[in-house]
Length: 291
Length: 266
Ligand SMILES: NC(=O)c1ccc[n+]([C@@H]2O[C@H](COP(=O)([O-])OP(=O)(O)OC[C@H]3O[C@@H](n4cnc5c(N)ncnc54)[C@H](O)[C@@H]3O)[C@@H](O)[C@H]2O)c1
Ligand SMILES: NC(=O)c1ccc[n+]([C@@H]2O[C@H](COP(=O)([O-])OP(=O)(O)OC[C@H]3O[C@@H](n4cnc5c(N)ncnc54)[C@H](O)[C@@H]3O)[C@@H](O)[C@H]2O)c1
Image 1: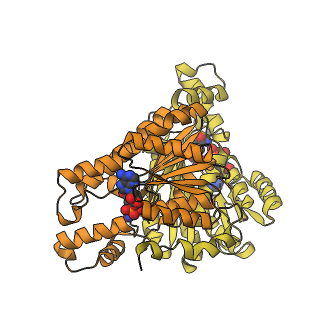
Image 2: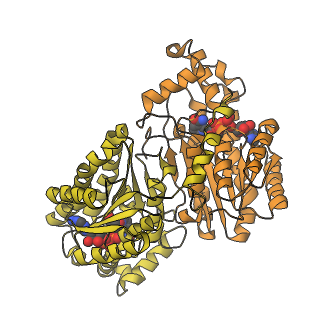
Image 3: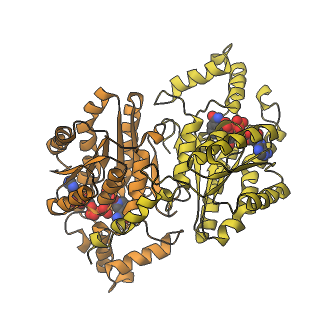
C-alpha cells in the first residue's frame, strides 16, 4: 500500500460526518467541563462557549454568587450545569469539587484552570510587591492549578482521556518591573504546564497553556487603575483609557483581545482536532509576543 | 462552516501533509487550489476533494520562482473570484539525492532554503498586495519542530525551518495592522513521502539504523521521542491550520504552534 492510500483521512470520513455539527470538529457534546475562576471575566466566556458546544459545565469559583449566575446562564444554553464554591488553594475543597462533579455531571473530560489573581487584596493600591502578593499569586495561580489537576487526575486517567487547559499570561513570557510577582507566577504556569503534560501523556491527557494578551475584565480594570496612579504617562486617565492607549501603542494588530477569543482557543485545545497537541503555550495577544 | 464561500491555496498540496490540510479546509467549506510541482499526485487530491463535494483545482506551481507563485495567485482569483487563505506548505528535506549523504552538502543547503524559506517568501509576496487591498487575509506557514533548535545531522533542513519561523514573524508584524494574520505550524513526526526519505537517509547513513526499513526508523523515532506515544497525522496538521486560518483565531498572529505529541514544548 502506498503512503497516500494508508492515510487515515478516507477511513475517518464517516466518523467525521457523524461528529460534525458546525461543519468542523469542535463539538463537545456529551462532555463534562470544569472551569475554575469561571464566575467572571474570561472564565465566564469559556464556560458559555463550552455550553454552546454542548458540554455540561461545572463552574467552580471562590465567588459564590457570580458563579451561580454564570451556571444559570450555562444551563440555559446546554441544559446541564452546576456550580461549586471552591478556593483552589484549599486541597480538601478541590477534592470535594472533583467528587461533586463526578456525582452531578459525571467524570470530567475537560479542565480549564482559569482562576487567577494579580496579588493579595488591595494589590492595585500598592506600588510595590509585598510578601503577601508573592505568596498569594503563587498559591492561587500555580499551586491552585496543581491542586485541581491532582484532584481530577484519577477521573481522567481511569478513562485514558482528558484535556487540561491552563490560563497563563503573556506576563509569563518576559520579566517586567510592574507586578513582578504576577509575571513570575505566570512563567511558573507555563513551566507547570510542560511538567504536567509530560506526566499525564501516558494517560492520553493533553495539557496546554494559553497566554492571553490584554482583556478588558475586572482584573484589567484594577491593573489600569494601578498604572494610572503609578506611571506618569498614564496620569489622570481612567482604567479604560489606559487600556486603550496600551492597545494602540503595543499591540501589532491594534485591537484588544476578548474573553471570547480566549474561549475559542480553549475550545480548540479541548477538541478532537487538537488530540496530538500537548505541552504548548499559545499567545493570544494580537502579535505582542512572538515566542 | 468556517470557510463557506472562502478560497484557500495550499502549496505542496499534493504531498502527505498538504493533502491533509486541503481536506481539513475543504471539509469546512473552502474552495481549494492545490499548487504543486507534482501534477500526477495533485490531480488525485483534486479528484478526492471534488468527490467530497468541494470546489477544487490544480495549478502547476514551483514556489521557488516568484513568477510562478504570482501565477498561482492569479489562478486562484480567476477560478474562484477571491483568495482568503494561503498555506505555504511545500517543503523538501534536501536536494533530490540527499538520502545518500550523512551531512548535507551545498546542494542540500540551497534546496532547503530555496523551497522551505524562499518558497514562503514568494508565496507571501505574491498574495500580500491583494490581501492588503482587501484588508483581510490568513497566512499559515508550515515549518517543523526541527526549526525549534539546532541539532546534529539534518542541519540544513533544521536551519531552513528556523528561518521559516522567523520569516513568518516578520510578516506577522508587518501585516498585523491590516487585518492579516500570519502564523506557523510546526509538525512533529508524520508518515509522508518526505518522512519515507528521511527514514531512508537514516538507514543509509546512521549505524544505529542500518538494515531498518524507513517505516521501522519512523516507528522507532515515535517510540523514543513522542510523550503521547503515537505518530501525528496529516489530519492533525490540517485541523491546526484550519483553526489558525479561521476567524476564531482572529487575535492570534506571529505564533508558531507545535503539533507534535509533546516532543518539544514552546
Ligand atoms: N485580563 C487580562 O488581561 C488577562 C491577561 C492575561 C491573563 N489573564 C488571566 O486570565 C485568568 C482570568 O482572568 P480575568 O481577567 O477573567 O480575571 P477575573 O478577576 O475577572 O477572574 C478571575 C476569577 O478567578 C476567581 N478566583 C480568584 N481566586 C480564586 C481562588 N482562590 N479559588 C477559586 N477562584 C478564584 C475570581 O473569583 C474570578 O471569578 C486569570 O488567570 C488571569 O491571570 C488575564
Ligand atoms: N512529514 C513530517 O514528519 C514533517 C514534519 C515537520 C514538517 N514537515 C513539513 O511539512 C511540509 C509538507 O511535508 P510532507 O511531509 O507532506 O512532504 P511531502 O514530500 O509528502 O510533500 C511535499 C510536497 O511539496 C511539493 N513541493 C516540493 N517542492 C516544491 C516546489 N518547489 N514547488 C511546489 N511544490 C513543491 C512536493 O511535490 C510535495 O507534493 C513540508 O514543509 C515539510 O518540511 C513535515
